[in-house]
Length: 215
Image 1 (cartoon, helix red, strand yellow):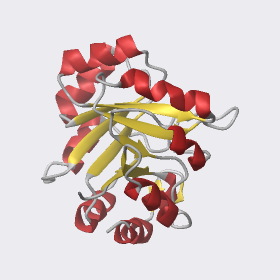
Image 2 (cartoon, one colour):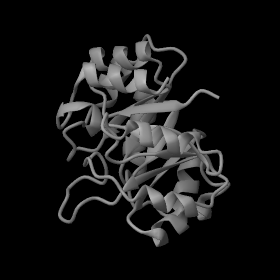
Image 3 (cartoon, one colour):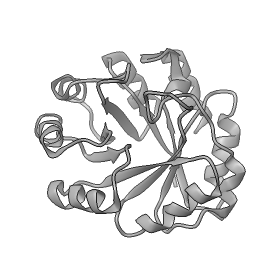
């Protein structure tokens, strides 16, 4: 099975094209005004107008229905990612209302955080395990921080999982090893800051190198 690779925080035609050409499977777009990667629904609709065969993911953080209505209505994503503190009830509500596959992000620092994964079995289509943000950080993700991947040995979930948080060219081989480990549920990787030259500025050469390393 092909490794699924999501490049997140895209905002330019060049970055989208590089993911498509390099064999990525998911295009992630950030709808969170505090983020340097924030985009508008119309901007994304224009960016993905010619994209075929890839999942287009709208990443939101504790978004209300009015904002989700706008994103879904204009962008027309193929998946929604909930990257805030959304409760299980809220996750189910969003999935039911919009009828789209849901990615739920979980912030991980210790084994207790990872224990929450199994509570989402049957409620979401993918889990994304990201490192808890540093103290005082404004962003729930995209901080270039990695959690202790040895904790993954205790992961218990029936839901497919994307590994995220601080993945870049320096640790991509180890991250891919976690995907290839048949004893866990990890099916793919999610990258954002690891393929940037500065926050929000995607580096095309890094995207190409990362995707080449994941073949």
